[in-house]
Image (cartoon, rainbow, N blue to C red):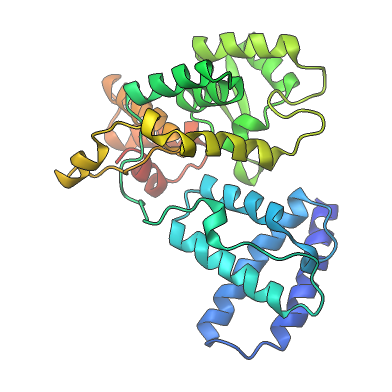
Length: 301
């Protein structure tokens, strides 16, 4: 914790030097951009050994975008945060890299907060079949974990062998979520079987889905790109028509939508067991690892 705090302070001192001389934008904009940089440098301190903010590159932005998506931030919020990062980057006298525009980061053009992002059973079956046909075990297995255990994409990708071995033994998958929060979720039989197969081929001390010389954020991107590339094959072809007919659904499927499917299924299970609406949402929020009723309402909309 001390090392993380010191790294963050060192990075923010560099940001402060730029902020001190910034005369561009309104007070509100300057405050908004500064706050965005505070959060971005926290991400850098927690995930990278970077010493100079001026040396950031697209890989850092990709990683941060993935984190923001995992927190269910809207596309417009993510774009504003990226604008803040680029603004500060432009103010540094010496920079090492050119940062790419928003188009590179696969951001939705519309803000779907409040729309139903869940997958249908047919869509889930189609991506499992397609990933199997194309030999992408990575996509198949992480999709199953997201659907059955409600994992965020980075939670699935970062699973390590020791954690998985314990979960196979106990029937409970221990997950370290955002903010370092630890939660346990029941392990489905489908997930248990695939994890048992994975453990056999994973060296002790290694991650299940990230090879020794691979970068986690690039593995995450491979899964997201697979879903994006194969939208027409995976997604219900009637989604657009259903939207025209007034259904409050998104027009495309995303990995994070599988977490919505999980949340909705768990909510219905708790209701069927006689839980009240509030206590059902509370139970679901604990499984999702955020414990906020307002966020849970978004998932089960």
